[in-house]
Image 1 (cartoon, rainbow, N blue to C red):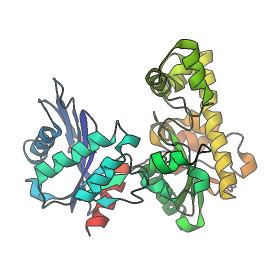
Image 2 (spheres, rainbow, N blue to C red):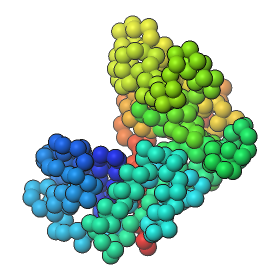
Image 3 (spheres, rainbow, N blue to C red):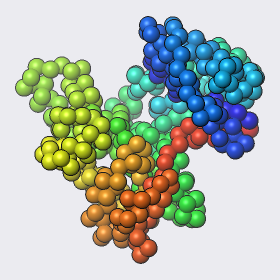
Image 4 (tube, helix red, strand yellow):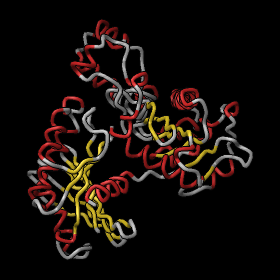
Length: 397
């Protein structure tokens, strides 16, 4: 069966078509500037790439163009849309309504809409993407929603309740939800497979590090705590996000500068993190280069990043009463040897011993711990699209 995986944004549409017989990616692409002049579609298949200029007033036109590129011309991988067995959609927020992936029905859409206030930038365009897919594919092709938050619904109340008046949880849904759940679920399962040990016997800390980063404690296959909170702003510092700060910083800045809540929200989400401290860039590669060249603020923010990741690993080892494995994934986790190196230094007290040569030379999925390390340290490329496809296949079967 062939499953189409969709990640819809307000003006974009990412897609992958996966053949579930061998879990191979048949094609993938990106539709950009939907609803904006100057739309483009980049389609990749058979080791080649094609870029097409096309106006896409709505997501429906983007789906139609995507299907055209999949089924005709040099980049064709199917004869027509009838070869697609199902569509799986990434949905950022499922609130407490969705503890697992779900077949899309009218009730499912209503549930996603009801928690859109928790992810106003993400859920509405993803709902729009789902409705457009239904319009283009019709009722005969089943569709599924896979939620970033679902994996973290196993957290206990001690981990997800905030110490503010309880009615804000009861009436407004204010609690820790966590994100990147599909990635954390995928790499923790891959770690168990790599180690040859059942997930039920492992205590794992998964570090999804990229422009947005989160760290999760996976105890016997279940998320019991995670660094992101009500929103993806919480946790460790990121490309442009501050991560955890004293809440009074917000009101202090407002009092001192006259900023309103929207301006402070923008400051913390889009002008902080690596960019805010370094003053240079939100890209970790630029920060690494500047730090090596002697830039003091770049070196400072990198040291802050190592420290915060390390602190969360230690805290989650305590929360799980043990630690068997640390996983690095995401754009930074998979590619930055420097971040992995300086995060692992100083964790020897946990029984974690890191091998510099392995860290420098490994590719794909590999182990960077020494032979005598009690805690294994793995680098595992994440694959959220495959996880979405697997969930979709399981649901329709």
